[in-house]
Image (tube, rainbow, N blue to C red; front, side, top):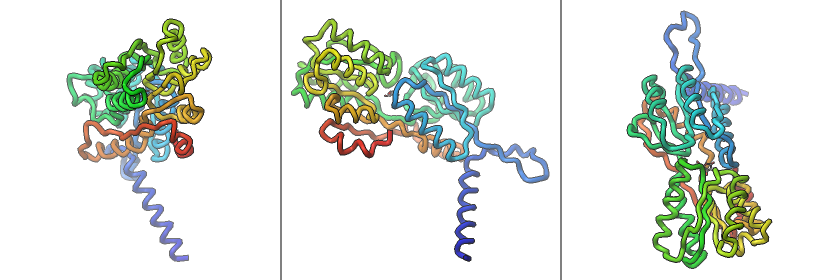
Length: 327
Ligand code: AHR
């Protein structure tokens, strides 16, 4: 019986400690009674819900906030930078304790981030980086290395096709870091293979519907030439696969398809033999985001780029791996 009481007390102290870590500092003006401790408040400006990957990221950050008792102010920008700037302005006015920003595009953040800095609100960038003349405007970037993802995709494709392929590229959102960097890394490797060329490249905005639409246009004009498809995310690849299937072009066999993200739908397509490979990009950033905010608030120094480590998955092992995928 006594050990049960001791265990209960230990658990209670543990819970109190975890909750205390997530409280904002008291103002000192709470009066003589028990101190009123404010809940930690974090504003999260999300790009939107364009892909399965992004939904997984949203769920990870929301779930972790709930688990830790953090009040999360969530704003979905529906793919518009103007809405993200509005959300950030509102978070600053509400004096949140930290801002988490997944920026839709790379540029155009300096004015609003300067306001956050003046208000002493740390800004944590998640999954996408920005271009700024003043790196002190954000605290850290927690993300994958998109250039490296592009390189991994190209190296794999070069091996698969013996360095000979007419590649059709589906780019992500114009101006977004993953679209710019995944293209850059891919082209960097292609420069080593003179017989591997990008024949056409167009944005399909990271969505399945546009992936299908753009692929249909490629098929209409270039049907006989298409040997490989490189999509900057799985959703666009799944749309392209649908277009190739409908045109009777045998994706995964006659046309090699590779993409980035590693979502469940991509594994299903690999098991079905339609997608050849996917480069993982981890969206489960919630725990790392709140650990980082806790460190920053405690005055600890954090790395400017906290990098996720990703790997490439192939059709051949997809069936073994699919059961353990979390997103
Ligand atoms: O920023 C990460 C990218 O954005 C993911 O690859 C894509 O699916 C998402 O929309």
